[in-house]
Image (cartoon, rainbow, N blue to C red; front, side, top):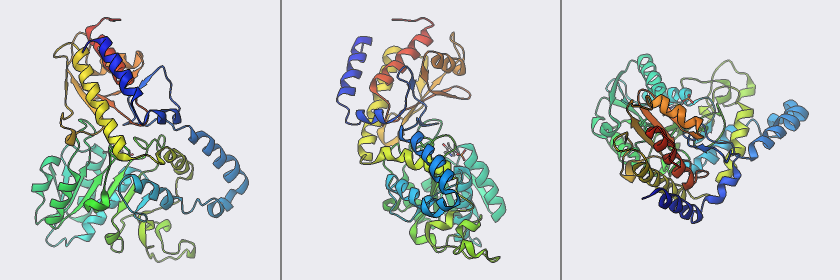
Length: 408
Ligand SMILES: *Cc1c(COP(=O)(O)O)cnc(C)c1O
């Protein structure tokens, strides 16, 4: 594949792309190749106007009445149901609020509380987990008298046993982009008598997820990555319907009370997804997320997945064509069944510096990915707005940087 052939192929792939028109719904700088949507998604165009209405009219004119009249009070469940559609959850099981970190804590403690802790005192955590999940699982284990055991996510299915209360697994590894087998792990953990907590930060909005169909017990995830909710947008929590009556939140706030305005000194939990709430919802960021989710109307996740795989395949081929032999090695699985929506390239130090220097130079040249210590370059592909031409340019610029000379 020569440079010209790759550029031509990119143009043909973009011309045939059924999702190509979606890009116009995002506010993106066309001079920049933005491949960091796995860290912070780009802003959908509808967000700014919606926020201005929320601030000016709802907050500014309705004031306190907006909690009822503008539906602020029930927004966590309403927006939760919109996310539910994207992760295979029927209405009434997803609530939006707090951070992913906080929701990991709620879910892990609640899962342990569902177990018979006389016999089950083990919390399994994905050994390569995003650190916050590990910190919180460890604290949750300490508080509930459990031991924590770190195991490879790929081995989770056979490691779950008679002592396991809960297994916390990242659906897609944030560093390598490896996709784990949610249906198989969920089934195996359940067969062992334990519960699963899935972290969907790198899969929600990137690929089809079927929480209900696959029998997941709990799930959490970010909304500022592939769901484009904006920096610090609130996270979501899924509690399978069959467990909701027994969901015993470790953070029972007044917003999860059955009758919050009774201001009752005694706690009585609400039914359903509301039970996952804690305090007053983050209305501004929650409604920014609500507006951001409009881009998903009518979008088929199977088409998103197909484009994601085509983009990452194409990027890998371009890297092979453009980057000097041996300078980078993909740590993202080649098999589609094991790949999320990013490509991570290990890049040893060389004439262009370490991987951190290489990424800094890429960013200077208008290709925005990110760097994870010690030597990983991450490129996230967001099918709703990433073009094949972006993948081609990113690989070409990477080749130029590593060659230490501009080629064109
Ligand atoms: C991004 C990410 C988080 C972030 O958690 P916050 O509480 O939003 O900071 C957690 N877990 C995983 C797997 C992530 O990728």
